[in-house]
Length: 318
Ligand SMILES: Nc1ncnc2c1ncn2[C@@H]1O[C@H](COP(=O)(O)OP(=O)(O)O)[C@@H](O)[C@H]1O
Ligand SMILES: N[C@@H](CCOP(=O)(O)O)C(=O)O
Image (cartoon, rainbow, N blue to C red; front, side):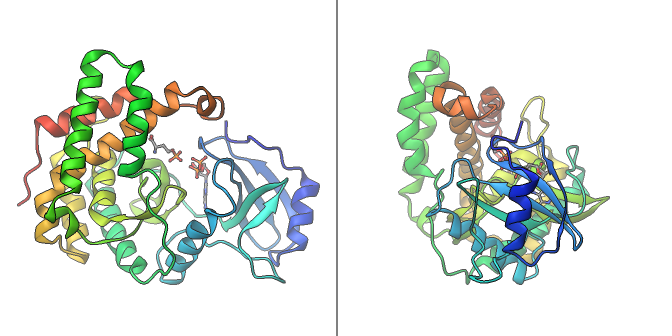
């Protein structure tokens, strides 16, 4: 369920009067997604997505919305936030909540990706990283190491000794890595940080867009690539690495932006970090009652499996 706040046709008509996106035709709730309220909004000028933010604040949102606008202007296929006619503001208020209207991307998610899809994601991810280099706003990845350090003690009491041991050991390892010289040398910039299969659109084999930027933040580019490898290039049932898909993604990424020596050295550590990040957030969504009331939690054990696979079978680069 992804309509947490009901928006009426009248609310939408009132909103459209403040924008120059044409006149109202239809408003339809979207059933996918777990974080925000989403509607498809059709006017006589085109199709849009209206999002009401259920978790992010008015203060946090400009970073994400202006990042999308910056990337769209640089030619990266991402939703482009539409502004109010008078003020030019792209952060809107609907039913008392922060909101945005973006253009609707063509295509659909590719949930059983082949190497060709992984290559398309790798290529566009590298282009997106380069395009984000001169983005001026700064907001850290709010689901980065400080959040892991805060959240692990909260979820640990819910775990059996074997899982708790793995979680503690991995967090200690990641703190150790984060203090290293190689980590300090990693190139950084705005990253998507949640570019899973359900956040990319395809028409056939052609990538038509990246969306759902609301976990974005400034972090290492390598972490973003690791998050993608951990979702697009594994066998979902076991969490095991898929060599053909990973090779396709890495080659396409590196054809646009070759990895530095520090990035090559830390690829496996960041694959583990990417698995840890989503294991922690899924545990947190699962065990924290306040969050669980809003979210439909994903299965935490999936990322426990991915992490165990990453530790047992490090990836070797050519
Ligand atoms: N710009 C967009 N263009 C086309 N479809 C979109 C767009 N934004 C969201 N959607 C649709 O809405 C669904 C939920 O959006 P998502 O951003 O994943 O929600 P949540 O933030 O709640 O996870 C997506 O799976 C997709 O089908
Ligand atoms: N991709 C994350 C959860 C975030 O959900 P999204 O629908 O906003 O992408 C996970 O799989 O845990």
